[in-house]
Amino acid sequence: MMLCEKIKESFGRRRRKLFADYTFFISDKISKIDLEAWQKVNSGNNLFLSPDYLNLLEISEDENYHFRYVIVYEKKTPVAISYFQVIDFSAALFGEMVSGQLSSMQSKRAKLFQTYLEKTKGQVVLRLVTLGNNFVSGEHGVAFAKDISKENQFALINKLSEIISKEEKLHGRISATLVKDFYSNSLPVNNELKEQSFLEFGVEPNMVIELPEKVKSIADYLALFSKKYRNRAKNIFKLSEAIEKRELTAAEIVKLNGKIFALYEQVYNNAKFKLVKLHKNYFVDAKKVFEEKFVVVGFFLDNKLVAFNSAFLLENGELEAHFIGFEYSINKEYELYQNMLYNLVDTAIKNKKQRINLGRTAAEIKSTVGAKAEELTCYVKPQNTVSKMVMSPFLNFLRPSEWVPRNPFKEEMV
Image 1: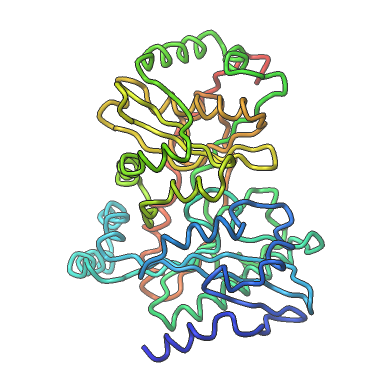
Image 2: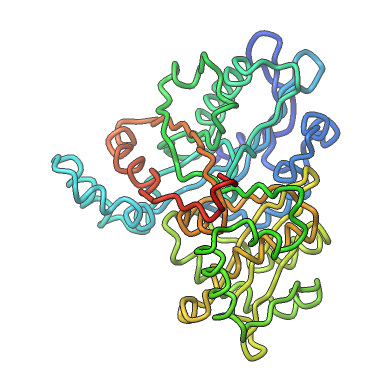
């Protein structure tokens, strides 16, 4: 306990040596970071690396979920920022994730580990240190000054991951370090992560819609579809005629907060990969902090909220789909999920955004509304013997499921 307290006290006190002319400064709170230096490196104004957003996530922090913020300096100049999430998995949660993969393995060690998980359900068995944000898809864990080469960027990522992982060992057992979500054009030819025992693997792609400039309404967008998919969209809209859709004001989000969170929990509980749950006032706080940049649309049946979607309107011409929630029991009858996807397209058009990031999951359904896959690459490094043994089932769990891409557009749009 004394050792943990000393480590915690060391956060934010001084810059420390990294390598060559690089030093770094680490903190467990975004408020303790030099915000001017942080934002200087975050020159692209990545909202998911902004202090306002990171502070919003910090409210969700609990005993099994912590944050680390790092600024890297070259001599006296800030040249990189990085964001780590440290998550402890209980045996019950980890067992739920990999039970299928462990059951299919024939080794004695796998069977013994499965038995161990069953006997220690309340204990922490896996600590995952993630460079990146487990709540959103894409490159939101690190930013660099423009003159840092890709090779040096990944050298810095490797060194920072190594240091953070070693220090977090002192709090408890490290099982793996995860560096997440790089697009192919971001990867260097000489990748130091692969040279330092990181395993490369693919995850479910980010599904993206690029809106042509001539599209000024949802009707314009559907006019780009082939007759088959245009009719399908019309049928989806017809099934939801009884549903009222409207953007919620800050006051309405406060009033409906309990129901919004309950609908979010339905989706969370059905998710394949459960990490940590948002805090109960997340949507209220997000609207308060980001105001018009954060949009929540409610779907009402007989004046009762039955679904919602949320999105960030980004300064770079993009809409980032965020958390959703809906009543599973009536989803098919009213095509709630499909309507939410089309509503996100409509929201993007009305706000003059050209690109829509729909995120991971349900890739095939998202492709039916015009989304295309952008592949994402991650890296993971097991830190001990036990984690090496279970890394195979863990990666199998994370790997994308097979799906069939659909193309709703007319042939001339392909």
